[in-house]
Amino acid sequence: MLKKIKEAPSLTKYVVFSLAVLIIYYAIEFIVSAKTGVERSTLTTCITGVLGGEVLSCALIKVFKLKEEDKPVPTTMMSDLLTEDEINDLLKEENNANG
Image 1 (tube, one colour):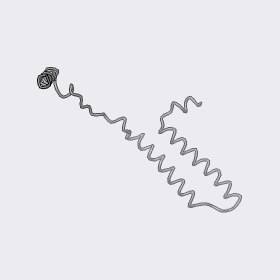
Image 2: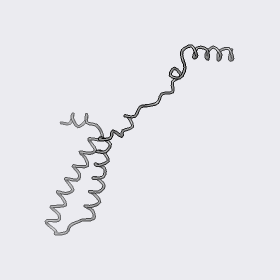
Image 3: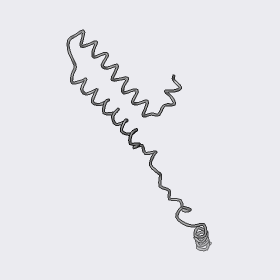
Image 4: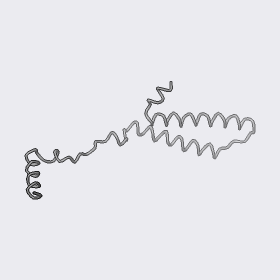
């Protein structure tokens, strides 16, 4: 079980954590409000809004694949811009200027 949790992506771990916190909060809130008769509606709204918004954001990232690692990384290697002959000519010119 712990191995599966360690191998899970960070985004999945965060969603599971957020949902677990929401479930625990609502269970405790139900027990407290049943015993005291006082409902903490403002706190419930805030916690639901924050964690629900985070879960929604994570879901949108998963659905639309908005992660940075999915975008292609531009390369600026000299070999991508010039042919091998052009690189050799530039190196010869540089060696002649320095030597």
